[in-house]
Structure formats: structure tokens, C-alpha cells
Image (cartoon, rainbow, N blue to C red; front, side, top):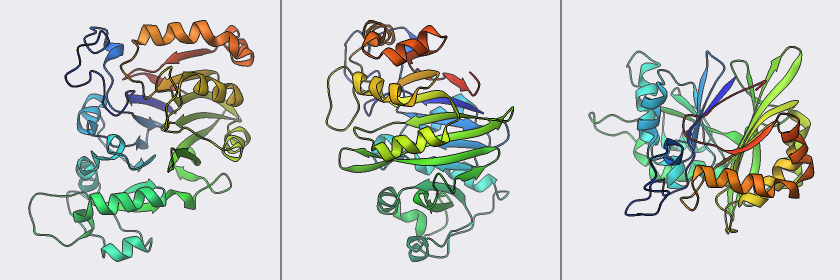
Length: 306
């Protein structure tokens, strides 16, 4: 199982439009951050987490040829507004023949259609219906539109994981301010042992129940990709120290900060981590034993048993 970071930036992306700060003008490719997204594969089945405004460019760079599912974390524009570009995947799955879901109201009732599977929590489903209403309506021919099969991800759980290929996927409830957000734990059996990758972005609160879901299901947590916006606190995102504190509770072998602003360069984020890791002795010990805590960057590849 492999997860590739397709975007590690916050809602503005980096460089930020009109900004002349050192990070936005940096020549270091680690400082070029598309909006937060990830690609997950078991080698046969392909999944995307979130379809932000740069999804088309991310998919081209990643070389995605087929897609089996999209997992949505929440409905903000930087995670959703590239959804229309999944239409190339939804059409090629049926040899280019388009089929419309029976009706908008059937979709509201969770009567699943025959298109590309999109998994989202109920609040995010409502946003998709509102922002992309044309997908679910009978419209004139021409222009093209995605053919999607929209599922409530809350139908799945620790005891009833979503199965795609060799991957078992467990949704993790979180809060992004007052907005419900969904993290994902990807598990795979290898050598009679469970290996996992957790992807938790856009949160400022996670309950002990959700922490327990991960800890009870993770087996060996090889990688944690965690929202870590900046040093200063934020009303809807984890800052660096909050991300480190959660990482210590989850004890991954490798921790990766994502959804980064242009406040600090890649190297300066690593410097902050290194200088503050002693506040988190259990996490510091993991690093001494061969683990790591680092900022993620676009195109970073994470594999289980890493």
C-alpha cells in the first residue's frame, strides 16, 4: 500500500497569489505546495482523498489512469472544487457511455447510482448537492459532467470498514471548527500483521473515541499524515504543537505535517520540529529508534512497512 502526497498546502496554496515572501519566492521544490490531497493505491485499486482546485494538475503529475473511489474529508473549496474533473474517470469506467443517476431525490435517499464512488459525511454530501447540483439533474447534452455514486461514509466503521482491493478503510470523525470533518485510516494485512497509514487533515479537535478507533485498529501505524498549519494557534486547524501532541498519542513510526502555510519554508518547519521534539518524550524516542517527524511535501511517497 502506498500513499502519495498530491498536495501539502493550505487553502491559498504556496506560492500565494501576489505574495513576495521568502517562502513564496523560494526555488526549493519542497516549498511548492498544491492544496491538500493524497493518492492511495494497493497497486491495483486507486483512491484519491479530496479533489481541490488543482486536482486536474495533480492527477496529471501523478499519472493517474484509473480511479476506483474518492474519499472526501469535508466540503471546503480547497478540498472539493475540482470534483468536476473526476468525469474522465467516471466515463472511462463504462467505456465512455454516460449513465445518469435516477434522480436527485434518489441520491438524497442514499439510493446509489452507477458512477464513480464518492464517499463523504452527510454534511459534505449536502455541500456537493448544492455546489454541483447539475450532476444530479437531467440537463442538455454537451459539456459533459461527472457520473458519480455518492455514499454516506458514516455507513462504515471500525467494525464495518470500507473494503477497496486489499485495503480496509476506517473513517475517523473529527471537527474542523464547527464543521464535521472525516479522517481516514488505511489498513492492509502483510506478513500476518496489520500495517496502516492515517490521513488526518483539517481538524482542530479529535475526540478520545476517535483516537481509540485508530489505536484499536492500526496494528503497526507506519505513517501519520496530520494537519499542522503553522506555529501559531488557529481556530479551525491544528498548529505544530497540537499535531505533535496527537502524534504522541498515536505513536506512528513516521509523522508528516501537511496543510502548511507559507509562514515557514520546508527546512524551517523541520528546524522547529527538531528544536521542540524534546517536549514529547515518547515521540522523541520513536525518532531515536529510527522513526521520523517531518513536513510533508508534494510528490512524497509513503509505503506501509516504511
